Image (tube, rainbow, N blue to C red):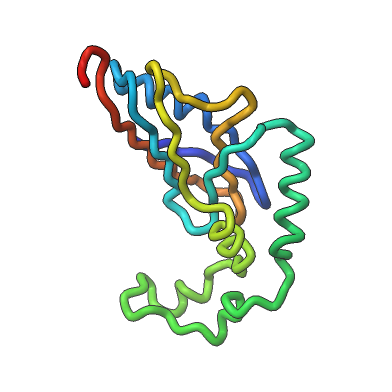
Length: 156
């Protein structure tokens, strides 16, 4: 199963808990197990935290300090990069890539997946916990994979 989400420019944090619950519920009868949530992109992250507006502002501010976009990252020196031999469109396509090393670095620090237990047929998140997609690069369509694994009610 997967989610398709439209993100906004910059660091954009989207609460995907309702969608994750909906996909988990679509797998009728799973009483005990887990949901694995995976971003399929190298410039996004999946995180679990409190989804409160002022905290989200703090998170954005912290991430900008952790990997400032205007640092001289090697990945951003497009003129020195070689396109992989199988790159669709060759060097011209590779040269159109955005200068986004900071986004890749933040994605590595935050991680691209989370696993949430299912207990009693529900996602076992804490009171203030939300599952969030963290866009680190720019506005575009993003895909999040959701896999539900578990035992059905009445089975062990």
